[in-house]
Image (cartoon, rainbow, N blue to C red; front, top):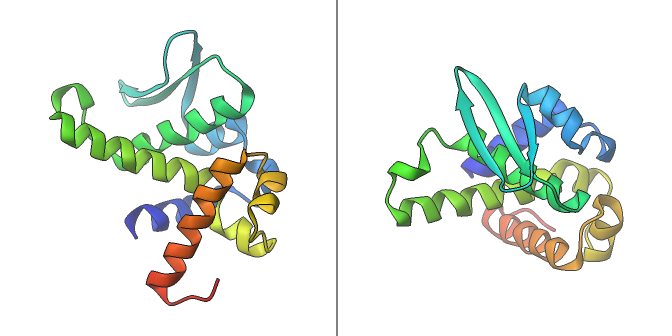
Amino acid sequence: MRIEQKVNDIVDLSILDVTDLNIEHLAYMFNVHILYNPQSNFYVQKSGVDIIGLKFDKKHEIFKAFCHEAGHMFLHETHQHNMPRSYNEYQEAEAEKFGLLLQMPEKLITKNRLYQATDLMAYFGVCEGVALKRIDMLVNHSKVSGIEF
């Protein structure tokens, strides 16, 4: 539950509703600098300053990338270039999960009773595949926690 709890704590401090789910607000709340570029998405810390690089893309893809890179910022202290490939894949999976949770926070889902993929798609502006992944995560979380979904 480490990732879920981390995201829930962040949401409690910085997200009141869907209008707060944007790069400008979250970058301010996370005290991170954004560097838009034509080549790649990345997270790096230079001289104590957190920087998320975002590749120019469609708006929803840029936000998805921001959430993923924020996952690296909040979860990982290592430099991926110095790690074994299997550990890099593990970190990428963690960042992907973090990103999905941040894009569609549980707090907003339960508060607004968004329990169908179509509800998530309309409220968060995500595609069906992403909404279904989040529904699966909610169902699995409810089974593990003994919470009714």
